[in-house]
Length: 506
Picture 1 (cartoon, rainbow, N blue to C red):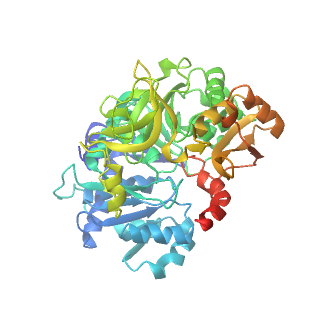
Picture 2: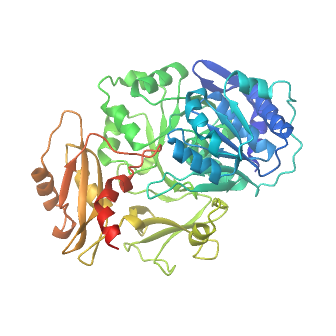
Picture 3: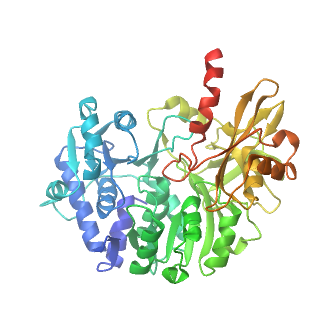
């Protein structure tokens, strides 16, 4: 299914219905489709051809939806750029992605001006506001006459950069349509819903895992430009939000908010989460404080879309699992040779099907590694176990595994133990160099508001739950964590300083 057809068909079904709510502004499906078509025709007027790149730097707002569907209808590839990039990172991504037209929110004009001299490929800059309105004004509202195939690429999002430079994940209409249908079915999104977008739309989680399926279903979308628990509560009250996606950090902030009032969330019924492991205590708080809100855990990544789902009816009994394969994808858990593992053994999750990305743009070697298993299967980089009933439990990223004295140590196992401590809000475990064992676990910990703990207490807590070689040898308390826009802790920023001297020795 073509992305533009999702909006076109929803418009035919619900012409006068509100498609997007943003800061009190209501845009109907008819208006959204017309403006997307105008944008597509305007791109053609610049001479852009199918497959050429249009970049966008913007917070969540109505224009993002116009650009998303308009670029898809034009045959161009939309490059979704993080608003958090420093100028050097922004320049790297824009150049690497071969962006020719850049749409940007005025808020980021200073960054854009800083990179202009070093981005010769960009021919046209269009600020959101009056210049954007003028750019699309006067163009036809009819559907663009562009020959498109669902295998054509249409969207590029960037990996979070938790282990190095971000990579451009290029996906086809078909791949993202599979994910949109997966979410619509598995999370029970339908035309009656008001779907909240509260994570950045430049990431797959908001753009393809929530916004796109909401439009496919004919739901109303309500956008939050900047995350604050109080602003989220107001959005739910004002728009009657019924469903949304959020990362575990946001979920924790909602239930810990000193101003928490369940009455603010009277219409909220469905929430899905992913991006990082949701601590069990957060889920239990949800069950207690918001019993009408049904939690669905989804598991996936930019390269694969959603590939596993844990519906709310398996909670709390299945806490810790990411669920079973989504209904329209293939996944398996295999050893390094590609042989399926037995229940209870540790292997790497792999997937195959139309859900997979096309390539890491401009990275042929990394693309080949991703698909190196053969037979259409791709490596996720995530280690897991699978039980007799087909439920997957993540163990860790394969790159994060610690080898201490010849023993495999999985940071997530230690983090799970740390989360059992009443004072721990968030934690990150990683390996640091040590002369005798090669590397040993270190734990960085963020405590819950108003609670205290000491290093000795943490180590003693772990001693009752973990073998000696798995216990943290370093415990450090922090006020915050560096995170990707989707809420993943960037362990490389924590770990790299410990290994800098080691790398120099090599």
